[in-house]
Image (cartoon, rainbow, N blue to C red):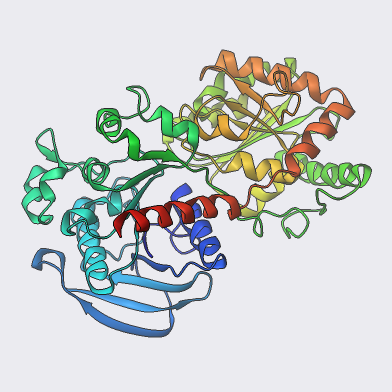
Length: 463
């Protein structure tokens, strides 16, 4: 099987795509699938036992060569080395704007993927997001194909002048006079997989399809949803070196409570909060409109009324960061904003928080709520996408694991916070919700089995 992605944790990780690609490939290999993993060579990626070969690509996409070998973290890896692919960031210039030639870079990457497929004839080709979507234009359709949609809001739309250069099936990529790598891939892929079942339904609607809902409804029979997993070795409170005190789901409740309290105290100290009995909520997120961090700003002045202290860790859009920084200056005893991403601190936040807040406006899957539950933090989320599929509301479900806001507004989210705070006021209810979430299996084992079943079905259909 040939698996192509623009991101791969921990080599080039910008968002959830990197974590999903890395986690799924590792688990597929553990389950015995022979995966040829390919990504762009962004530069500085070291391989052991390296070999190289030239790839047959159109002149505008080359010269291209393939570096193959073993990477210390991900194992067997193929890297496409072609003009303009090597950059300090996969997509963005130092000023935060996109590289002006991103269309050429990733369309050329697609030509290289197609050349690999032509020469190796894999049983299945698995593509991820728009960066790999134009691959299918250069292939004849004889190889079964899977397209995973990690974030349909990003489509790679570019000039229509590219259409004749994509390959014999390039006309499928015409989109309102331009070239859309994602719309063409949706038209041609044998299977289209959203990264949660609820999001698979959302993208068929005008509100959730980002303009591609019609194209997806046309292929509705090929659309399904498979929930992402998380790396349960990396996100393991029993062995996590970032925690002040370790614990596990099997740890006796009193000892687990003490350990999480020690982590909570370390968070409060870093945030400059007093060490008291007020519950602690945290957010670990990119600061974008999608993630809804701006919805938290109106909530900050009423944190003392809930009562709840809040720490936000994240980076992204400047206007959201500025609004959060201003709110932190106004309410330093109740709200702390850390601008940037600090991975050890993110782990500590999960290991000590009472609540993990995810106010996303849309969320294809979401990882942080699963990571938080594995650590015993209780999620408060908006009722969208993968958040709906992973968090059961404790006021509606006897086996609830958190709280869901029915609308993506500050008012609805505040109401969910008050409901969560009422549960936290009872030690037994708090411990029950926390422990229930820790016992759930968020690993890649189940999702990988679903992908294997999908691959096998496609191979059977092609025979």
